[in-house]
Length: 112
Image (tube, rainbow, N blue to C red; front, side, top):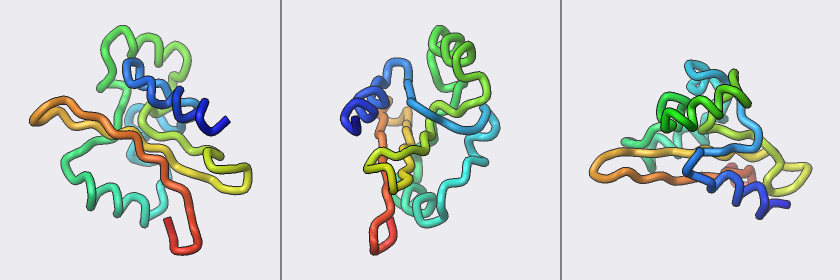
């Protein structure tokens, strides 16, 4: 099941995410625990979370039809097991070339 979810999320052409939260402006409002947000900002300072406006126009239409109030760059789910809530975040940057990264962060005894 974990591999299926991750493979679906890696469908970068459409930035498809299984379950996401927040609208276009609410992507920044999705609660990501402070340690995760700090780690992302520290390790990927020039990267941005994927928003609807970042999708190709045809993908924007498809996304809005199916997920009108959801953020395509953040997913919160049970990717590591039913008892563990993980955060998946799709980031991109366009300079020097277009690049993407999918981060799946799960809690562990030391933090995240």
